[in-house]
Length: 325
Ligand SMILES: NC(=O)c1ccc[n+]([C@@H]2O[C@H](COP(=O)([O-])OP(=O)(O)OC[C@H]3O[C@@H](n4cnc5c(N)ncnc54)[C@H](OP(=O)(O)O)[C@@H]3O)[C@@H](O)[C@H]2O)c1
Image (cartoon, rainbow, N blue to C red; front, top):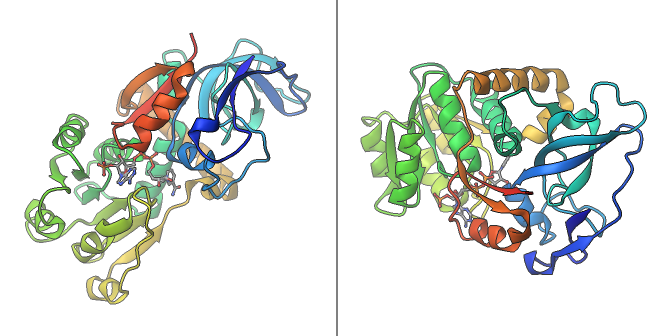
């Protein structure tokens, strides 16, 4: 097997495509032939030692992937050789083969492609948990999605539309805004032009959004929170722009608004039954064609350095997926 090995977490340049012995699965593990692996934002951080989880060295990055079971370890009863699965395990995906925890593998129904499956769990689970569980989004309400053309952003647009909400999508270029419209956004804001508060006011008839989905943080958080509707819910999803913003708490008082934290990874660990029910609903929505990952492009697994550069420079629209031939 081959894998992109990180021996020194000082950046993408140090990742080496390395030949390794194909491992044998231990108890509770399966050996997968990786067919596709997507890039998530933590994949950028983990190879720079900037992510909250710091795997022991050396490690293979690649948080989320899909492939075929080649061998099963002791005690694995629900998966068999030849089965198609998707898995989000945090590391291991940027390789030809990987050992995956069987408990984290999601069996794939016919018709669920490897590319879509590798781009599914993180973004849709996060956005479903955020909008439906944490924000209690209702049909007819208005959602503002920041960073709307990114991975979690495109999933948020589709999920909000699936529950009958009105979606305002905000992104940094006209091309990204056009993509959001294709995904069902009712209105768009290019936040690299003009005043964000004025644009939100214009798009909501002065009322403000009922729910704000924020995976970007930085300078947009305060003007967005100032614009929220009465009884609004502001979802703290991530800080893709870097800085973690601070907010004057009087704004929450003045709008009767809530600041709502979203941490899907811990939700999945602490509330496994609720998470399983949510994943089942998402798989059903996928099979009904109500949601579908937006694939920016697929790239050969060997071109991981170029893929990282594309994501790091904000060029990706939707999800970037590495594939093995
Ligand atoms: N809380 C949770 O449970 C959870 C789960 C998954 C992900 N997240 C977080 O959500 C955030 C987004 O993840 P993602 O996978 O959707 O990433 P992504 O696909 O790269 O999207 C992030 C978006 O943020 C915007 N952005 C603004 N400034 C940026 C900068 N300096 N560098 C990169 N992007 C910038 C970009 O849109 P524009 O160019 O349009 O501004 C980009 O499309 C990350 O912080 C991630 O850690 C949180």
